Length: 182
Image 1 (cartoon, one colour):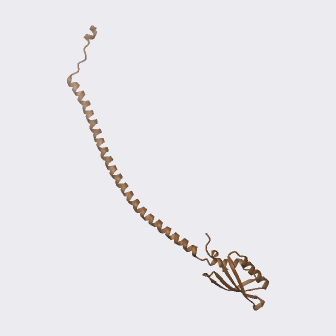
Image 2 (cartoon, rainbow, N blue to C red):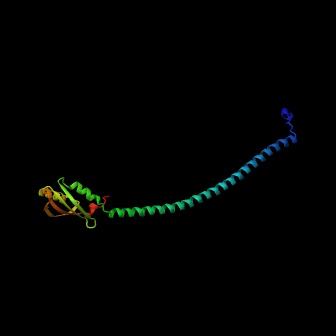
Image 3 (cartoon, rainbow, N blue to C red):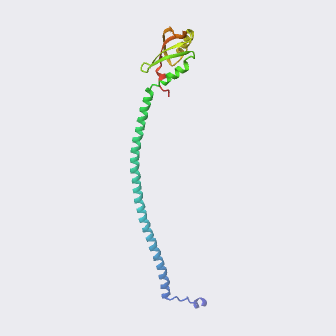
């Protein structure tokens, strides 16, 4: 116990304590100001970024509204044009179908001399010549069996030059045959 009492605590001068304490205080104070300045800077930066974001979102919304209005106008215009085109195509008569029909259904020994087509009545008037009466009968039968021909009218039978059988023929075509098929 005597040893314990004989040991003295080391003496630290108050000036030395004050110097060490003041050094830590200044470091803490500097760290505090750095943190405060950083927090303030970050708050200002956040506010500026929020303002920029709001401005950009407003521009995007405005341009989106303009684009949407223009785009909707164009969509309606294209839709109306397509509707008009469909209506036009549905009512348009394709007379080239008549020529194709005659090309496919005319027998090689029959020829047509004139051709008159009335689109309103769908009536095709023709006169022609055939090698024989039996061949002419076969030609009329071929035309009568065609599903695109509504009615066949035959007349004006005569013997022409070179002993060919002359005739007049009228075909009434189905309206669906003259329209485009979807």
